[in-house]
Length: 106
Image (cartoon, rainbow, N blue to C red; front, side):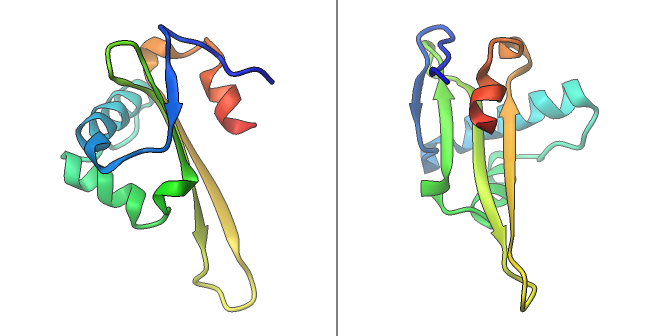
């Protein structure tokens, strides 16, 4: 699969400086999807870093420097004989339908 392009997006792992943008992205996705949103940037960042090392993330940054989409893998190792991996994918409502989510899922 080729890397999709949206307004000259660049791809990189999430960084701590992305916390405000991550909160905005999660809030926009929650509003569009009818889900609860984090109340501030610290809560959004905690949601990510609690379960996923930053190297297990990928973000699409658009030409304006905004998060267009992001994903991260987290592993639940709370069970003694089983490990579960989860993939979280978020695409800004304005950027949906352009292949970003499909790319992040593959």
